Image: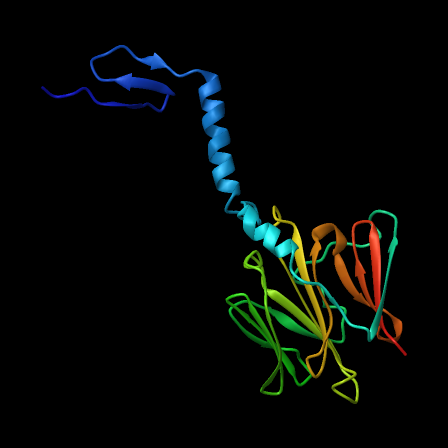
Length: 219
């Protein structure tokens, strides 16, 4: 005996051949629409979710603050800074194209940056001067980079920055000198890092939603 076929018609009715149609209620269609919306948004614009254990591990990533720098953080009014992502370093005199699974030179300098499989490398000419293994939440966006160049590699400054998907809400910032010594490295909450700016005398400013962090070299 052939079983009757079932389906949903274009008019929104559940039909079974040789049987009377059964109407699906509005609540059912609203629910289905919400399910489709959630599944679609998970693939767009940084939505979706990272595993909790990976997020917690990223939050525990060791912070480095060299004794060669001073750091000051103060509160500022909301909207003092604008959110910048891949274009974060465009105001610096030397910056590289955001890189993902490759290598990008910091134009006008001897430095370049690569980022692949969570490994960040900084090169001077062809030599690796710094290598960092990042937490696994930093896979969604490329690595941005910039440099402040002086007469000596020890006085040069290299900056790298990337961020997780928006629902995880973490940013990674690295500052080294030209020989690869780490001056500053930290995983920050997204609200702490909206923009990175170059101030006077080589001062670096990390602007947040309500905070301003100033990083300067000791004299």
